[in-house]
Amino acid sequence: MDTAQFFAASRVVIVAGKGGVGKTTVAATLARAAARTGLTTLIVEVEGKSGLPKLFGQSTISYDESTLSAGGGPDGAADVRARALTPDDALLDYLADHGLNRVSRRLVGSGALDLVATAAPGIRDILILGKVKQIEAAGAHDLIVLDAPAAGHAISFLRSAAGLLDAVSVGPIHTQAAEVLALLTDPARCQVMLVTLPEETPVNELVQTAYSLEEDVGISLAPVVVNGLYPDVRGLDTDPMNAAAAAGMTIDAAMTDALADAARFRTLRTELQATQVSRLAHQLPLPQIHLPYQFTSDLGPNELDHLASALLAQIPGLPSITTGSLP
Image (cartoon, rainbow, N blue to C red; front, side, top):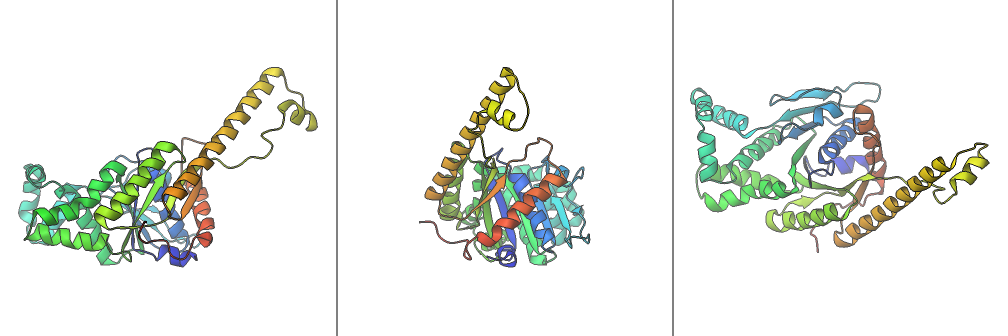
């Protein structure tokens, strides 16, 4: 698959995964990679207080669209822009668009949204997804990356349209839900990219989420991302004292033991992750993208570019058809 085909697969990519697997980092990586191919990209954040701005060297994002990474540099990259959506702000926009601007803020401030959300579960999610649908329809961005809620909420988040269609048979909520569901179930417009770590519990949850999304929502699945993979290191089975001697160095017994322990840990880690990657491939027949572990807790623009390069390097090895029904 060439890079243009990969990023043209759908206009909206929803990145989802269990909390702690690096979902936001993967969303930022995908956006940065797309921008480096010349595509203007918008990241939509819906949970609040994420580390998204810091990955681009910025401090905050808001409901209003802002630039995380300006294009036009020597690498020919396009802009990466972002906005944080909330149900209240999405409702204000919706009411304003329908000629109710004067009363919209009073309704939100009065707690009317909380009352409606209690009476019609899923209304908060449909407000956000409806705004994403509006942004997609405007066509101002080549790619929209939605940093979805963590996996458990992601399923109910994406089920909200179908649920409201069943609960509300007429009116604007029904229309909004129908239009959102049309977006979610059109593979040319929307895909879900699931993220996991190479560990047993996240892999289990990813597999379960994948089948739930396809069966309950009918949404297409992009290649899955296995995040945080330790790269292979040669020579881990070499005796540290012998290796030091070969390099013309001398190390004491304490250092020898520490190096041997580190080598055993790294060997065990790579064996375990290989087992989980293989198990994921067996249980979920979707292409995989592998992103390397970043040996820092303070991810920023340099690490993000490294991850984007790793993603871009793997696209040519992906099969041409990356979506379809799971068996």
